[in-house]
Amino acid sequence: MEIIAAYGTILIILAIVFGLYMTWGVGANDLANAMGTSVGAGAVSVKQAIGIAIVFEFAGAVLAGGNVTNTIRKGIIDPTPITDHPEILVYGMLAALLAAAVWLMIASTKGWPVSTTHSIVGALVGFAIVGIGPEAVNWGKIGKIIASWVVSPVIGGTISFLLVMSTRKLIFDTDNPLKNAKRYAPVYIFLVGFIISLVTLFKGLKHLNIHLTGIQSFALAVAIGILTALLGWSLIRKVVEDPDADREFHFASVEKVFTPMMLFTACSMAFAHGSNDVANGIGPLAAVVSIVSSGGEVMQKSQMPIWILVVGGAGIVTGLVTLGYRVMLTVGTKITELTPSRGFCAELAAASTVVLASRTGLPVSTTHILVGSVLGVGLARGIGALDLRVVMNIIISWLVTLPAGAVMAMAFFFFLKGIFG
Image (cartoon, rainbow, N blue to C red; front, side, top):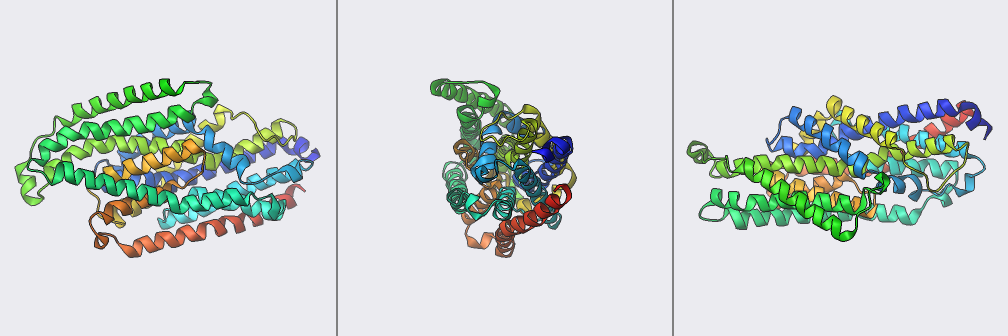
């Protein structure tokens, strides 16, 4: 308690600095791979991707980011054994933030799309093992998260595979692909608006004190879906057939219909990412702030101040702007060749899976889901359409992430304990 009384302000400043560093890493790595499909498919430029991310990532973090944050903060480890020594938990949260941030920086400079969720979960487990004891780790929860690493890319891949097959049946394999693309495009865009808003309304607005019934949420989601469909239709009807381009690539005109559609999935992907992944950077920061401001009380439940969500959103956007292009290239161009229609299917599948996961409060990996979705799109064209070497490198970087986070967190924990203790 004396340490928290003496160094409280310093500890909060450190938490904010480390939290910003961590969310910077989330932006450089995770958000970059969320936007990579749009860039890789040629639907948006890197500058446009950054603009979309600034608005929608921020909105997702602030509007719907409160739920997963609770899981990261109190679901992974049980701090009860150290309630009399709250400074131990503060050192642990700081060490976890720093360890995850350093690993994300290393991965981003290499262009590896690793999981920020793995990074922070591994770091929290590493601290808990040496700082509290192995029994403090909620191994059941860890098991669920590990299962989600397999299940979520499979779900993302399956949805994207089915979406590609539906576009093939309804649009590409018909007598008049361009006419059918214009006919069915608003339906696909409706799905984007409907799914993202429904899940957000069901779960994410409690910390803003907005409470809607199930029927109200559903009706509002339908309205938002119709609005996005109308907006999409107004963009799509301007697309005209380009016979010259069609001679070079048979479906060039049809792909032009999917280009504006990808603007919607890019926005929804950024929003979904903000709602799920901001927690990785600010969960531990929120824990430190709540312990210090309560004078050393380790509370299981505490209010999530809006300013912390804003700090998280700002850090994420900065990361994308400064270092995100490397991971964007890996996801957007190196796994499989993406066209706007394939990219649209991958992003709609990924965004749906991510928001469903944040609806359940499970901290899944956006990276895994998106890579799974891109793989699903590639598999729809046969295994030869995938660059298996790139896929193997990505999977190896995923496996290394958890232990790397854990080992670094252990080292940083002892370092911080030595300085303040």
